[in-house]
Image 1 (tube, rainbow, N blue to C red):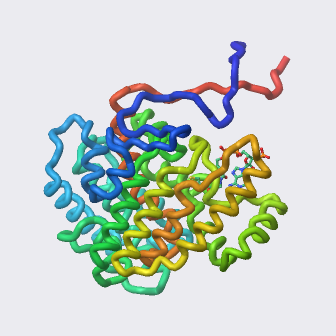
Image 2: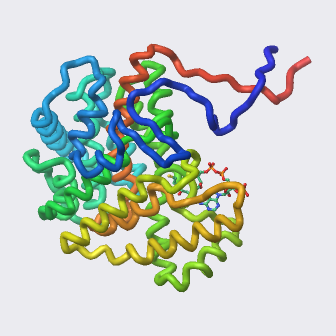
Length: 367
Ligand code: COA
């Protein structure tokens, strides 16, 4: 039997692909998406334009911004038709379970094109928004294909148009989370793509990976934490109790970042922009105080490892400020990240190489 030299349980530090999609510098706290700094892109791009950028390496001639916006609008309408004909796909109680089920009803295919990708990407948002309506006992709301994607997500959730400032904030959110190096769900999508399976299967598998609390499931618990803490003077006691009982502080720590996650700063800025537009983000001062306390306590307990706020910490405050129900936070993450997943699917398909690592057998060997 061949003895394999090293095992890397979490694949930490293992480079599995070359990519032009995004770069995460964990030491500097820098995220580059398709050659643009995330801090700049976050406030300059609609989600559709971010997808245009993410999908710019597809072999086809890229659609214009207007064409892609129209493709998204049409795809939202198509996804809604699917929902109307089969509303039971949203019946599961867990939003990520429902998202996985509903998405798996889309047509597969291995086509690498903006049209095929927009169909899946837009559908994820329609499913997420309407799952929330079903959950709240409200009727489904049809998309408006003439609106921007972010504005229409908010409109479907509320059955009322959101302000421009709120739509911009959601564009910032979706753009910022659209890609992030070789994270677990992206790797999952690439593994599935490497088997030459279809695009929908890649996305469904990635949704399954994103669902886990160590990946995309943290912002809901962050909001619950802030609600339980209630005011800054309770932060120390609450955090200490949580850590003493062996729990982790959600929204803190990251596998790659050794400094504060740059996306936390982007969301903080997005929240202050909302405040400037007259929207109250009442949890911002509390979130800042809790972050500071958590960072201080974690530094005492883990002097060997910097544990600072990650993307999910301020996701909770940002999405809460634009009235996205907290049980929908992970699904909103999926609605943004799906753009990146599909860009990686295309990149992986282009390599034409099956991802198939090895394991070391430690079981019994028959004599
Ligand atoms: N709260 C308390 N302790 C934490 C922690 C947190 N948020 N994050 C890491 N630690 C501790 C671990 O308990 C571990 O301690 P130990 O060595 O005494 O067991 C040590 O720091 C190293 O953790 P490890 O699990 O090896 O780090 P990782 O790179 O695998 O983890 C995360 C990265 C994100 C999974 C981890 O920081 C975490 O669980 N954070 C909370 C969940 C979260 O916010 N997820 C969203 C990520 S974007």
